[in-house]
Length: 323
Image: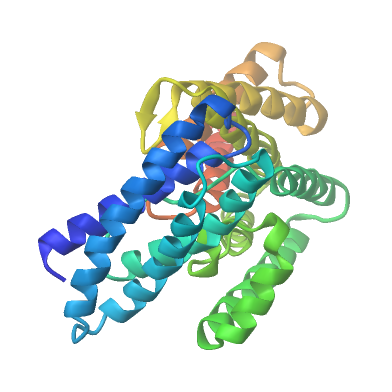
């Protein structure tokens, strides 16, 4: 695929991504309808040119997969453009249908080294599951296991998850079945990329093996459980000042504040008794800042892996400094 075709494919994917962001129920307003229609027409026009070029060059090995994924996006855009106005439920239906279509297109483009945005739309069920599983992990770490237990548990989960990742790559049917089962809490890109749960279990295993106490892992799971979805929700709805890779100042500040409070709560309940509030606040500040920076700058790898590691190691280092 030559540079011009790669550039056009990337721009089209970015337009589809922007349309999905516009249709996100967290930010959707009636006055955005005209802008959504304009973007749909732009997507159709750009897709028509791309499809014609892809059809002409089908002899290139990687292009048929891209063409198939692109047609799915185009079909949805065609359906949406046939009517001048849509009820709110129709826009939501388009939002839901576009997500897996974009996920497939993005996966095909990434497979030929074309960088496109990772889609993380508002998903209340996922956010609640995220928070609940993190609190459950914290309770389990503090009350049900020692360090050896955490190593065995997290290692076993990581092994099972990795095995499933390998199997679903070899079996499209298994992949489809797993993703349908996880549908309410899955991100679209997880159809073609490593599932967040695999990254999460792997990060906990690394923390358990490398950090001799449980406090770092405890802080890490609660920060990821609460700060990550809080930042995403605020960033999508109120984010105006863009920082890096579609992250916003508002979202990053929300992450920092939530992570700071979560870390204080863990240290206050499970940290050493001799640690005063000032020292605890310093540790919480280091952990929260580390997590916010990792969340802001993570690219090309799941932040369910990088955030726990960043927060866990920062907590351990800060505790060693202040205790």
